[in-house]
Amino acid sequence: MPRTATATPLVRLIIALFIGFSLWTVMFSPWTAPYIPFWYVMTGAALVLITLSFVFGNPLKGVRIGLTDLLLGIAIAAALWGCFWVGDKVSQWLFPSFARMQVDSIYGMKGGTSPMLLSTLLLFIIGPAEELFWRGYVQRTLMQLFGADARTISTDVRTTLFDKQGILASLLAIASYTLVHLFSFNFMLIMAALVCGVVWGGLYYLFPNRFSAIVISHALWDAAVFVWFPIL
Image (tube, rainbow, N blue to C red; front, side, top):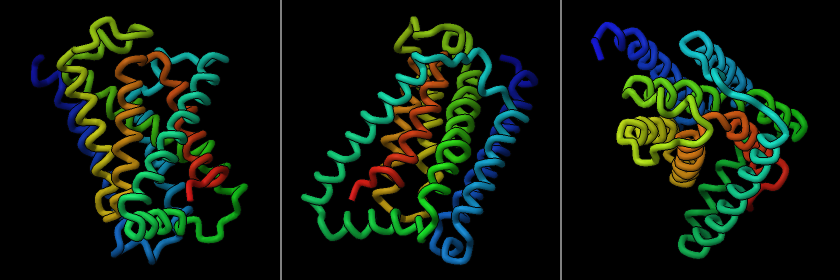
């Protein structure tokens, strides 16, 4: 592909990733997190991600939503919650003190905030924003840059499961989504981001036109694991 055809999308992607990494570092790093109102900053960061997704790309292109997508989203969220419940029990058995301390620090971010407010923010702003940005914009753009978009976005299910370009683009997107949590220095949070990134990134790679179901699952999983059914 000619360099001029990819320069602008690549530069935009780099700018967007830099902004995303900067915001998440401020929110989660021990040098800045104690001094900020976490949920106000998180909500503002989510709105920034949504804006970047639509200014730099079109994350909802070719995406539909219907009852099937809603049901799929619920099923994915429930299955992911179950995986995390099992993972928590295993980690508590293997490393009881370490795992408990790390998980408690994650739930400590709630800081007495109203469960209703948290549920609303996670369901309608934060969860959808992260999915629109990391899968709908970042992963999609990487697929376009690697030449996988035509084979990926135009069908309900990939006809070529082992497309090297698509797989590499997806792996880079998953790595970015994981590493953005690096400066939390919280192993459990980073591993949670990795697992979620693999699940949602893999689903987006395999079923691109079911992106609305993935967005729904992210929003529901956020609210379920953090507010409704915390894994303690």
